[in-house]
Length: 399
Ligand code: PMP
Ligand code: GLU
Image (tube, rainbow, N blue to C red):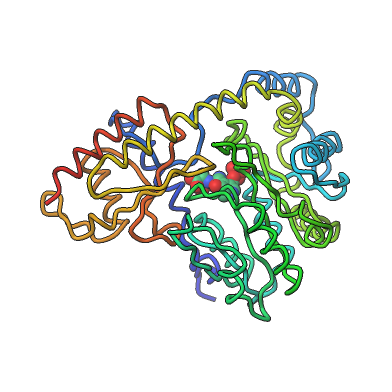
């Protein structure tokens, strides 16, 4: 037998968001003054009360295996959170704790997708969804959003893509990469469609707390018993509590799906980190004040980045309502040159900008949005101003 790699792995592209972040961090480590708008990662430290909880867990000996689906204590706290924040009633048996929301998504897809099943993806969408669907043996089906509607796809846009093979839809509101938030009426239309046609909804709500301008996050699962029965709610603490490195996420849903996800996880990673589980239970129950301060700061940065971008000739962006991302329309710059190097697409824009001005952004193509760049404003106002000065200079040098 030749020593080849599996077809499944050969077909998978590495995560471009993580690759850009790694490149920016590498340059920084070499002493280069890089401005990183790449990573979807809060620049804040994990709040002190959460760090203290982890220290306590360590000293109290919470260092052993826990049940695969997480400690009962944490699953109870997650149920309380889902009830209070999202008006969703679940029992701890309907909850699984995972190694980041990424694993919750991967387990959910592995639990429901058979080879050839189709999974609908309103696009642009987060870079990992199509690859995760492929890894689970499914077929990603992009449902293009309309820029004039802030890229939101509702029932009318989604329905034409539903076939007999449609097994699920991944909904991500607030959205990565464009920051849009689905309003309740649109979610009602999508819920009706899912119930009528009979497909699962995987609702990735990891950015739920990061909403601005009085916008309210609504969980599609809360819109009725029928849709709740076919929705898997995915969430985690990476973004809300600045805990990306702790790797803690969770999912809640129908008992049969959660059980299958738990069996799957029991043979791959077992329980999520025991110390992080304890710290997460504490994170969820306290810290409203710290959270409000972080959200306020993100809001200030959002407005700053938006106003700076729209002052630059040839560039434009929408003011996003949630998450900490903004998409930058670069179609006005395609075909222009910087010192002889032509901007052909979002990839070449990212590349030329990084070498020319040491500013890192993720090319829109990673999210299925050519001629766009994704910028994360999860970085300080000083960095945003510095990066925007460089971007302005870069654009002025184009011929
Ligand atoms: N969903 C979305 C939309 C994301 O942007 C991310 C970013 N990491 C995740 C899920 C996964 O988060 P984590 O695994 O860190 O919990
Ligand atoms: N989700 C973040 C992003 O889109 C972090 C990196 C990743 O996991 O993809 O940048």
